[in-house]
Length: 497
Image (tube, rainbow, N blue to C red; front, side, top):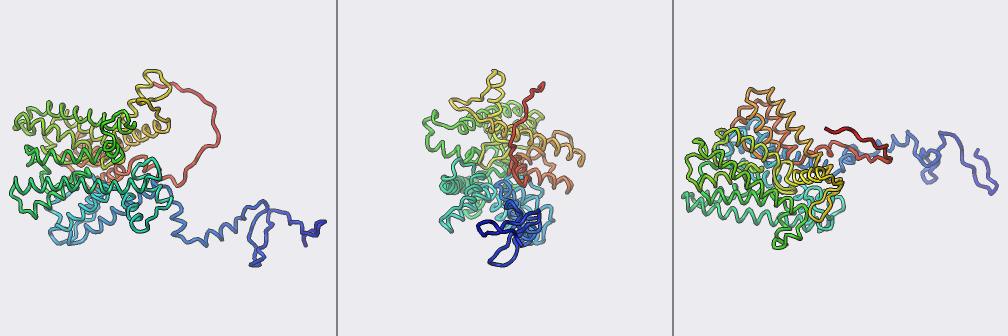
């Protein structure tokens, strides 16, 4: 019996195994003294929770959900492409071919192991186009749109997920930003599709139905920086056609700038002083890389008889501009990539690795990452303790994030290149080009993709997946929980260099 207190109450029992009693149910609740549940009670409560709920609770970080969403889209696309109706032969294609194509489409890469027009039927091509659209807009962007349309309401967790995918800076703006992204994407693709359709019909005598189909497919592929084409030679047959190449190039540039930058330019393009740091870095570095790439490609390939040599002066510059744009993660080519000089391949590797703007359809480590690290280097060379861009100071967290993305990306490319060299007998320049193209979600190739063994195809699939959702997102998705240090260690400087 428990001891009686002076006021008539019971004194609580003592000891490590003391429990409290639920007077409503008559059963012990297994609560230790101090309010903490005992181990048996925790185990009983754990087994009462459904298994699917326990698994879902472990994946609440937005990065994990985004990675899972893209993986689900790839799985669905693979299943659809495995159907006999998806191939022209009427038989189910090999699993590795369907998986590779679905991953390349969802990750808006453009690398192919089979000819898109020759192997896949109209149904298969429509599946590819749908996967490109899903991958370009983003799984979470589409999910947020459907949530808004169906329920007219957006929960806090859904807003966090959409914020992680669209890179918006305010949770209140997620719904409006997602709506604008979808409308702007569809409007841009419609404009590009109309121009291409008219050109295919008037300039190449395509029937209007075929012209419209080709126009829509290439418009979706171009704006989403996918690089899929309905021609075995990509766009080489249109190398001297400015209506086709310029339209596709402009669609790639707009889609690759990033939605926050595009919306800000539309609002205040006449007032550069009001541009954010993101817009300034993206616009300046994008324009610089496009100009530099155009000049270098044109000069290096000027007298190459297999590429720019047969073209006249204006078309040489057009081909150089097109090559400079496409190496920024688009994947179309108007000349034979395998015939380019080694200097052009090296420049392509650099441009593909850098990629396009953040929160857009482009891949790579992003121009903002490279631009921010350039400002970090400039500040360090000047002996400044803070990194400033214009009239704004960049937080240290942004600097560490940019460095982490760059180092993780370099590590992934280095390991993949070494592994692919061990798997195949192709030279280093071709293997490195293939790896960077896959990781940067570019889609350009020197022609070795179809000849790779299945193990190498799996490696490229992993690279495309990592390159689409981002190295830092992959690392965050693998962490089941975040840990924050509650204390600081003593500081000690080390020798650098």
